[in-house]
Amino acid sequence: MKLYDVYPLFDVNIVKGEGCKVWDDKGTEYLDLYGGHAVISIGHAHPKYVEKISNQVATLGFYSNSVINTLQQNVAEQLGRISGYEDYNLFFINSGAEANENALKLSSFKNGKKRVIAFKKAFHGRTSLAVEITDNPKIIAPINANGHTTYLQLGDIEGVRAEIEKGDVTAVIIEGIQGVGGVVIPDSEFLQQLQEICNATDTTLILDEIQSGCGRSGKFFAHQWAGIKPDIITQAKGIGNGFPIGVVLISPKFQAVYGELGTTFGGNHLACVAAAAVLEVMEEENLLENVNRVGEYLMEELNKIDGIKEVRGRGLMIGIEFEEPIKEIRRRLLFEEHVFTGVSGTNVIRLLPPLTLTMEQASDFMERFKRVLG
Ligand SMILES: Cc1ncc(COP(=O)(O)O)c(C=O)c1O
Image (cartoon, helix red, strand yellow):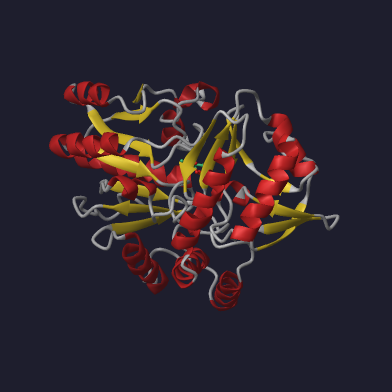
């Protein structure tokens, strides 16, 4: 059997990682400014992460959600405290898309409505509802095109108001920072107004923090820069540092009903210790402070370079937009300078390094980047 060929691959076989570095099967070392797509938060093979998962798999790798799992309760307590959402409830799932699916289901169960407002260039995942609210017709199969979504321009508060007034909108979903859309930060005032309108109309405000959460923006969640408190927050990627985890943080406005949501693997024992390790390391190593310091340095240095159209971002989620396509720059970064970076669309390089990136590594990246730009 061969692999179903859906990914255009770089010809590199990564076999080892440590901190912010990865190595291929030929022993070449790479600086990881991509974090495996915003997934690696506390660094590759962090000793605490390795130890916790190793110990847990040797003790109990899995049991079902039909019995008490105190590891889940511990993560809920830890995540509530570190994120400032102690009064919310937590539902575990396995991926970002599933987290959004469940958020939308919760919303629709609660207010009985079906239409969703999402924003242009949004990416929310590839499962049925998640893809339907993603603004990319190429990945929406006919079976997923069920007309539930209205896409508005990011920032179009009057458009949101007008749509909600029609009376059939269950939820507004928005990324803390648009990732796939090109590292675009929603205006704080816009987020505050969204919250106000949603609160006044029993419309659920869902913040997709799957990419921008877990400290990446320099606050635990990117929306916290705007001082809002949404009804539901979805998170994945960084919370597992590579272990597949999705979580849904649910406001106390929602009343849990037995059987309404469920999952076989969500919140399994290994997932819980992975998340616990991430949260512990974030606190012990003061990663939020590191993200702000190193992110600021990168933004400053990037802004000094001529020929870049715009540098956008917060913390260690940075978009570098060029007038022209960046494919060749990214290829040279990888094969000549041995640096992994991400991309948004055709013209934006996306930096999503582990949150442990040091100043030395950031400055090393800048040297390599400048060499490629000539
Ligand atoms: C903002 C956002 N939402 C949802 C998803 C989907 O997450 P997953 O691939 O884990 O299903 C992603 C993945 O890139 C994302 O960036």
